[in-house]
Length: 288
Image (tube, rainbow, N blue to C red):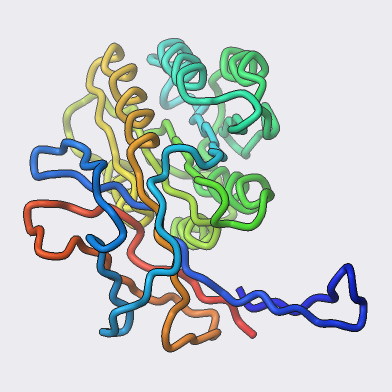
């Protein structure tokens, strides 16, 4: 982002922070196994048909995590609700590192409710998850929008943190003020990767499943379909493993266009067609 501000040491001096695009990514082979031994020269970034110069590259193992656990508490998921709570609680215990990571818990039915604010206290997060009760409508998009805009974006600068949102839902929405694409745009602006876990156990694809897959794909995440309640634990474990197996790339777009628009970006591994890069497909530039 291009910002102008007074220097705290010299009030007469104006400092400028130049916008840099930040991409968090996962690299796998064609069997889905994580590839964690790549270095900066292995990556190529292309925007507007022009190769970009990578300014910063890091294996994303140790940066602080900002995580949202967002759970559908509407009537539509009542039959598996207790097991979802157990699996989500175990996930929080396995992922959150005290004094390093922070997470929130959001439940949603007719509206989004913040059940635990950003904290590294695993006990508080577990209590919030276990205290949920199902009932009401489904404001899915509002919950995503709220978690990304009002909470996950709080800690700055953006590139100093990994941001992820884990969503348990059937993908249906009947109560939101915001649309699907507005929720997605806010997630993209907040650099949040969405991991979605479908609560549909019919094995028959639904429109809600398509929504979950779309949200994950556009932000560089993945969707899980645990058809048995016991499979939920494996879905959470897969997400935890991925959060420990990522890379981050930072670059200053050339040419830089501060137009407020969405810019598509392609990131690939040089000379390795056997590897798959999963990341968001672009970024929203700030507007001057």
